[in-house]
Length: 176
Picture 1: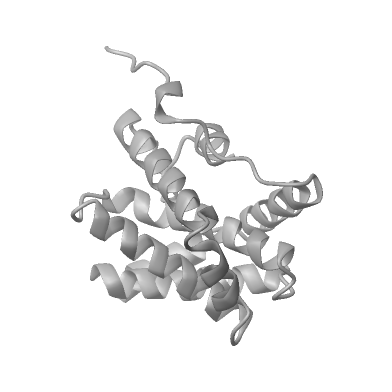
Picture 2: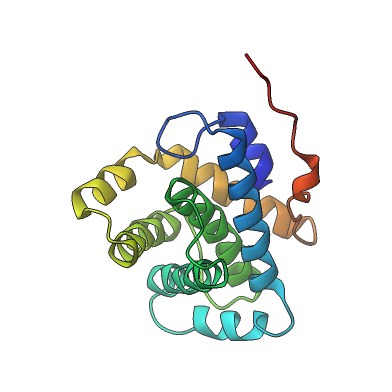
């Protein structure tokens, strides 16, 4: 799913085409994030976190924590260009978890609000200018968020989630 979205758009979220290296980094971050979200050690804690407080805030906080852990584990080597797109993909997964666990009512409005909170949190965490972060929030089309929510709901109704394929499914780079 994550790969399909990046391959369909061919962008990193800011409108520029993703390089093969950025695509591979994005896929690694999303896969690692999904492992954290669905691992036996952390899944129940995430569900509990999602059931506390306002759903959009809880969802954004959960994704921020996961991204922070991934960045720490990587030694700070996650390329900045993939942080927001990967976090947005993980937000979709978190929305699915919240719905499946019945700890929060998640609709387009909640996901859109969670995305806004997430962008501000990540901008603060990574020292990105708040104006740039706000521009990024505004650049994400509501239809794109609705599509993510719809895909997550469809997967949830279908009886599970699909993880992105391992990085070895990358397409060879074109020279020239």
